[in-house]
Length: 98
Image 1: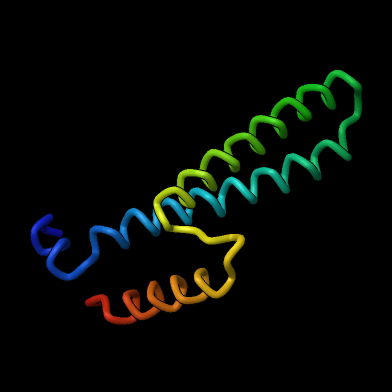
Image 2: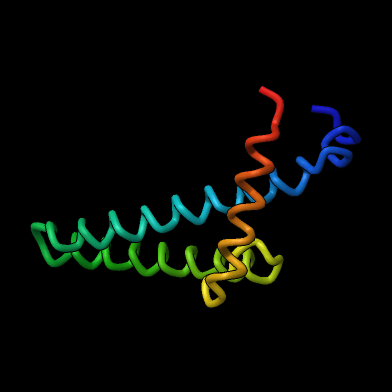
């Protein structure tokens, strides 16, 4: 889509929001998957490797969360603000041309 048109109809910020939220959700999924994998390791060496990967996934999740919080894209400690942001995003998505 044309950049000027994206700015006019507000889709430029939605794109950033969607990308950031998708990245956060994937990071959460990665943390969960690594945590489960750690419990299934056959050897201490593999477990050590998986624990390192889990630590890196947790660090990545924290960086994404901090990025989103600093830009007002995520409000994990203020539920009412997060609900309002979610409702705004829903309305924007519903109004997008198909």
